[in-house]
Image (tube, rainbow, N blue to C red):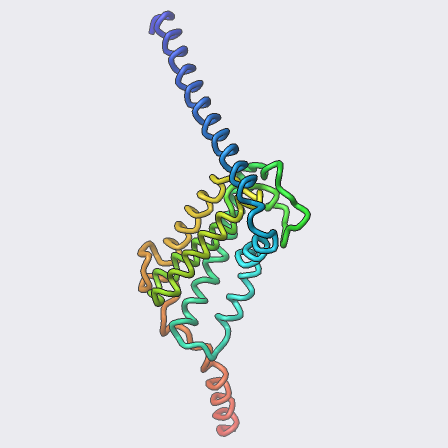
Length: 229
């Protein structure tokens, strides 16, 4: 290639890179302004306690709660399997969100009030994506795949949306953090349902759990062993 053509090609590449960088910078600035405006205009219209309640409801406190529900033997088979799959999804959610936060390392908004955090770990110093939004969307998507009654579905999706938007209102996240969290939550639901977003493709299916009868089977085996002795 002649030197003149090479120079023109390099100049075109620089122009394209400059345009792309300018577009990204413009989008990031629009995201920051919109997030700041929502926080300033709507963040104080709801008592802080209300936002903190949503923060707790979507926090990592869900993990031990759902694990406890999964282990309760009195639950019927379908619901026990649902909570087991949800527990698995929380583990994959932690991995996905943690890796993305560590890789992107986007700082949280400067106006975030970090004095009233519910739970904070080192990776949560970063903003993208929102773990609260990803967990809430995952729960809504998994309950949809499970085919729960319409009322519970409506509540799950409304709760998922409120948890995500409250992160912006509180100043914890930018809008794109929440959208990214919702995308991660949907991806997580796809993983847990084996790519089907349906009940039949879940990693753990109904009929594969026999925890409720495990203790009785063990007692019977012990009694049988004593009888043989």
